[in-house]
Amino acid sequence: MLPRLAKPSRALVAARAASSASAAAAPTPLSLAFPAAAAVLVGAAALHVLAPGPSLTAALRACPLPPPATAAQLTGAGLLPVAAAALSLGKAAASGRLGSATYRRLSGGLALWGGGVAAAGTAALRAGAAPVDAYAAALVGAPLLLSMLAFAAASRGGLTPSAAIASTATALGEAARGAREGEKPLARAHAGLALVVAIVAAGAVGAASAVDPITALFLRVAAVSALFASTALAVLSDAAGRGRSGASTFSLLATAVGASAAICLGAAVGAPAGALGAGARVGVAGVGAVVGVVVAWQVATV
Image (cartoon, rainbow, N blue to C red; front, side):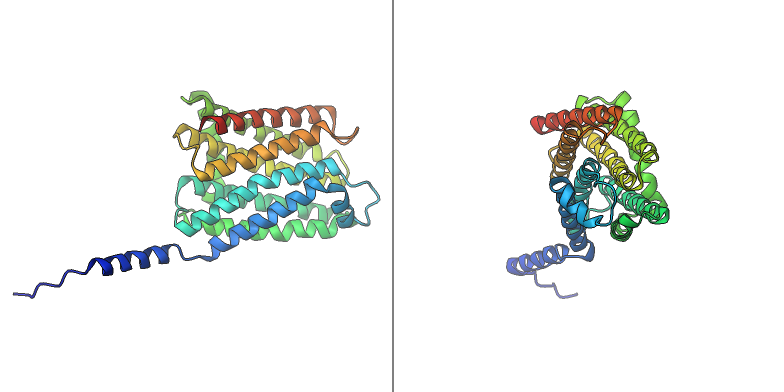
């Protein structure tokens, strides 16, 4: 007969549990890199929104045109939801939750954002707009790095690169269905806004072809960020449908989207004559106001 093994003491069991928890909470490269990227994005957003004139004059010191302050403010506003997603992915990486559908969608959207901004910077460089060369080069390198981090997060969550990119289209498709069939009003509102913001993003890309190269660069970056915001709204719609709007990830996303909408509204209303076309001014202000109302609705009901 085999001898009975001694039962471990409570102290030993507690020590083992604490050791396991410590190992699970140990920082990983992704859990450190994403918050750092979020901090850089918030800093860039602050420069574009709060001091568009001085910061852009320094960046575009050889520019023969006045810095497009309104377009720069719209660009900065669009960085806030991206920063919130990066911070959320960092927390998910630290807790081993990157396989969740929410973080899969955010990682796919972030990868697409990085590629889109890098493409906008590349287009500016190829156009030979010398005053924006240094700025455009930064828009190629930094977003590509963030895109690589997002692909790594998607891989940890079980997605291939192509599946990660496709997750954005899937999120918008689900938003379209949710806008028609959703049972909860807040979920339907978020879903409808996700589609509207995606349409506005497409319109901004078209408008960029009719302006000078410098303003076009900012508009294209703002458009790519608006596309990401539509993904974030689709994620918020899904959360509202599941009664999860009060969770920390969704509260952070909603706050960032709401702040971005408020900045866009202020930039559109306060834009000097000629900075935006009449249609663009009304469209940006209108969408910003509606997004702000829906986000306030979410905050008030959770």
